[in-house]
Image (cartoon, rainbow, N blue to C red; front, top):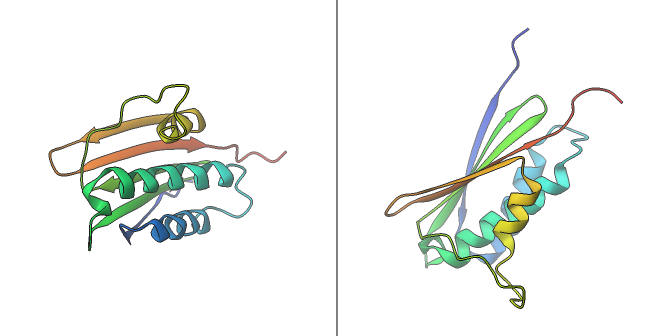
Length: 132
């Protein structure tokens, strides 16, 4: 039997309040009992926060988009915003700026595509579907 893939997309207002909405939406789309639901929640939160704080998506009336590509035992999360280059790596004394490092450590893979007016951060999170 062929594995089922599901693609779901949602657009969110570029506001701080929408970060929680995006996180809740993403987790609600995962299969029941997903062992990596907490990781998905953190990844979506960090990527959505970056979209709001570090791109034009955080400007008045702007939006960001979250896409989930679900397959048995994995999800690819893509957050697309209105564009900006990735921030430089944080220094050990910085209080913030650790989001992408956290994402890269939680995700099984991470990539970023930057175009003049659009940036997409995508990562894949895998979990076991075997009983046990």
